[in-house]
Image (cartoon, rainbow, N blue to C red; front, side, top):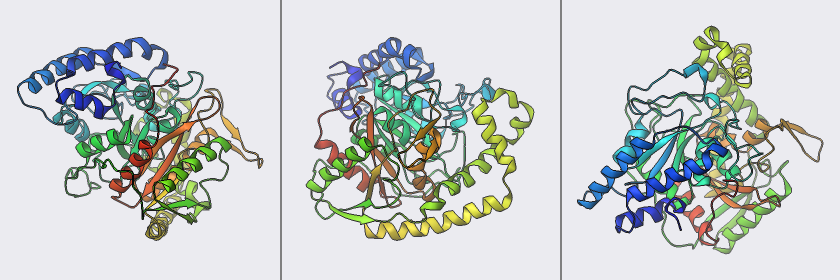
Length: 463
């Protein structure tokens, strides 16, 4: 196995045991970038020389007993919304082509302190306002969408051009591309991971989280990221936690909620079959299945858009009026639509969210975890704008992809996407696990237990 194929946990074990050096690992991943990224377009920019220097420093530290932990010497990508001092943060947009960060974001600083090595910035759908990331190709089929808005990060991890990466998630932007590219994606509890120094789409819905090869890898990254930052009002004050799941697979006594409503409506039959089979695997590990009804389903998408669009419009108000021609058409139209929404619309969306959070709290008193599809269908063709369902419904691609992920953003609950197979075309399928606020340890335990029943995953085939 070549170093770039290693999971984070496996690479960390090898570096700690001196079987692998950070230099060897970083060189391997950089060679992989040269080989496949011209075909996939995961990266906005690659900082190869800086990465090699950091790898040499990490190797020197390890050789002299200054091992920083499991992220020491591990190469990563950062979504191009995340500030790194001295580097451009373009949000994959001409609007910010000349913007350079003056300081590290909180998450970049924490990963650097843990010894992780930055390879470069990964593409986002412009300003994270979309769910396809058109600059980037799907890691399993280059003719299909990567998913968004963290499409570059997902494709980098899936193709072996980053051992892990960070993304942001406002309506599913970590989980959607993770599911479409066959990697793990974690949207933490709202406020658990600080967003200081991260370009905002919608401040009351934005989250930062990891995309990784395995659930254990996601836990290792979350351990480094989580914790209070006084510079951010929404940041939660929680004790330091080691999120690594145990090795066991016994889920006896755990209650898995299986939705009767919403999550299996208008879902591709192969997606439904794969997710229900994975839920059966959890039941075989001892979990008890409990059928549940998802509350306030008719208000979910209206609430998501009612919050996101006005907040995004407020953030972009100045540049939208001065340089509208620099935005991509799809993003500009959404931002212009924000000016048609009234203050009353926004207030009603806020009220709906308050009610929805209360209803979801009651729902999650009944079960420990909810299991459902991450997205309703695998990756669509890059030129497809709509999807048609057997009941006659025609849905925009972005509307379809956000439909199953939005509830976790509105309510702020944590959500984990785990690969659960492929469809007949070889495209990945993901299962979403949702839990109580600060319930990441339970989600990671369940996801890890499921992984232990499956063969080791391979890197994507389109790379």
